[in-house]
Amino acid sequence: METPDISITFLSDIPLFSRLKERQLKLLANRFVQREYAPNQYILTQGEGGAGLFTITSGRAEVVLEMADGSTTQVDTLGPKDYIGEISLLDDGPRSASVIATEKTECLVLNRPDFITVMNMDAEMGVFIARELARRIRISTKSLGSK
Image (cartoon, rainbow, N blue to C red):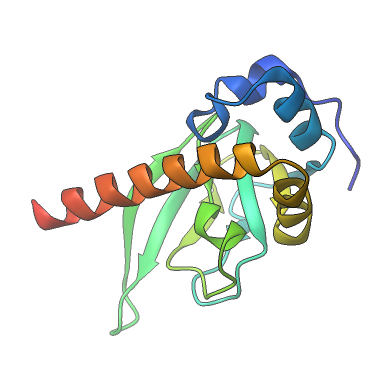
């Protein structure tokens, strides 16, 4: 894993971080690491403990849900600037779905301990991110309710 030279502009285009100030984005940018995934490689595995937030910088991946009977269902397709695993920043519970690269995919990863360190350094940033996480959960819950 290498530490990437992360663009503040790239981070500010991601909804989770879009309300942050430049100094806050710089604080966060220094905590990300870059990971590469080959086609068909698992980025996240359903049921495993959460390790952090993954933001796709290039490539594509699919979100797959494994059902109780062992069958799988694709529930979403992800591309650049999409992010996954955001709940694990707050809680280390098991992943609710798997994410599999469908082509060579690069991600920026922010692990939970680094996220907590940054939040302790800047409480205002924590409030902005918590609000965005709550908004995203609300939208997901509403979407599930309409199906």
